[in-house]
Length: 188
Image (cartoon, rainbow, N blue to C red; front, side):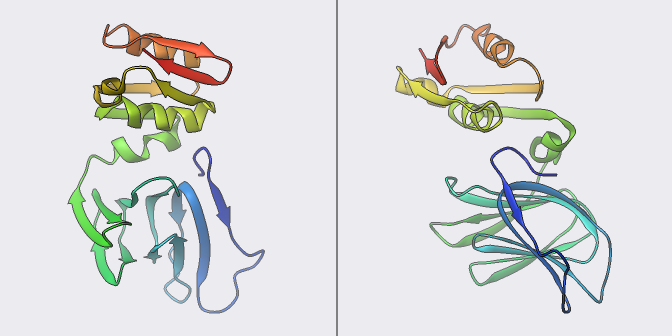
């Protein structure tokens, strides 16, 4: 599954001893096990080696991190000269500027729910939420109040809900107001 503003490049037929794809953006994979031909996802500076599993990779060019979130099975993540094995409910994060690879336990629903048509945010800054919504609904954001970027919100919405309804949900908190001008959301 490909998320909004994402691109997956792969050959017509996999040749040789591996199945390698290139990802720009975010994708969720369900990979059939084949020990003789491992599946490899290359996403910027991160490479994920898979034998058979379900997992997500987030590697947007404009973000500071590359993330791999494991739902089932096992993967080997390589980035910045480091390697880590993930088990289910773990996430590898690679900080592109510091070249640091870390692993932590996560609620995978927060990172993989998009593949089921939901966007889930738990105590996330408004700026992060609007950035993700902007990818899905294709809009730009302008802030009239800089401090509004950092107001935390929690949301669990269907990706196909009307965009105006999503903004109204956030406005109901009375922390921010929105104005839509053409393809730009102005945060007040």
